[in-house]
Length: 130
Image (tube, rainbow, N blue to C red; front, side, top):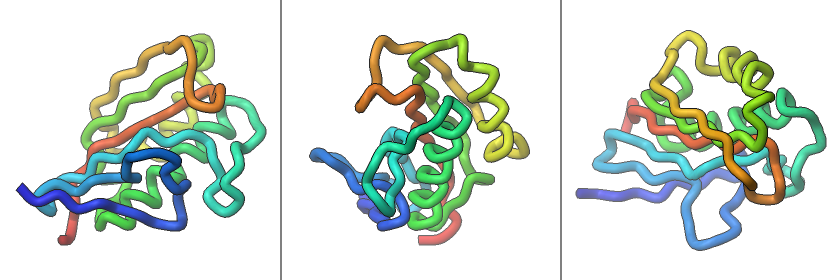
């Protein structure tokens, strides 16, 4: 089995012993959970759940692109929400990015997320090129 680390400056750099994503056998990309960090500044963005979800999905999109994939190839996501009461607003933005492909998804409410963000999302996608 071949594992290839993915790194792009267009998504936040890892702040611990993990990769932005891992490509497995040049076939699948598994992304790390992304939060609403602006990759240019390295700072958490201010904003409501919609703004944070949009930044998170843009970060995921850049990791996928760096791996030779795209949002249309996402097969599974996991959404971690600080407050399930914000599900509808998160889901609206999520649909803008993933509505056409409609990947399998799990959504869970959690007690706390890194840097006290409102949402964290990870993804699994098919790689188009090796």
